[in-house]
Length: 330
Image 1: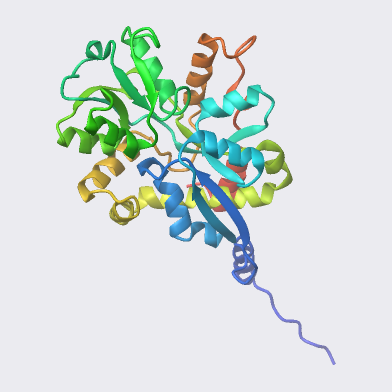
Image 2: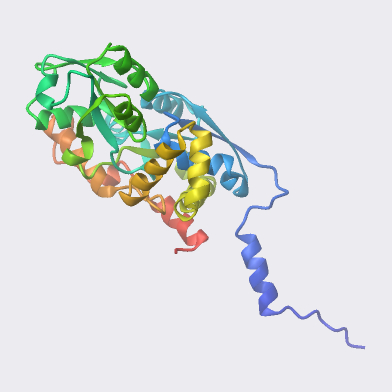
């Protein structure tokens, strides 16, 4: 007597292959700590990935830890208390040149949306000569391009103005409102609020630096190499979130309004600016030309020895390439 064999059709095989590409929902999720240097519009896609379940779909028990600024994020990465952290490329370059193996793997804020906002008596760049300007640090983050913008307008630091470390974006706005500082760089949409309050738009970063990588999700290279499949799962979650933000305008604006505590009109204008000007990239690429801009500036300042390095020294998009392959390129 012959036993009949179960027939396995091509459609069944295809279904099994599709299912195998997703983490099993019954498996125990992997704890995955992530550092964020601010909770602002630019970081919105990271919060989407976390709160909308895209990390969860990848089997990650993610926790986003707000550390207020790039230096604490870098310190957390170096200490191993987080796996991934949002960091500015200038900080990555700085620690890399000192032998710490940080590398950018996913783009987050791939351009500059900042306006230099001046107090009531500060309307032009020339008005800032001798003034006190606020920043989030004295050397890195948004202060790094601020110095370049002011230099292009004939203002040299520290000869022509004073810089003070005020803190985060909300702190900058508060210091500007109180008159503690004469001007501050404010990103969209907070610059809208400042303009509505009567402050002056002195100029835009992008007018001077049209190509600039502001923030990338960063890891220790040694950790990434030892945990490649895990990191690819994180990257897939980021790509899924970024695609969702681009493809779901109204739900995305609603999410940003509530999660980032923005006025609906500001969230809408911010979403439109970030998507139209590719401050966010739909597939989470890093702005390679923007990294080249930072390398050039670092070289001009004498902070890099010898020939200028390739962006590949500070970034590795192979994890993104593998993630896109698994997700399917659009």
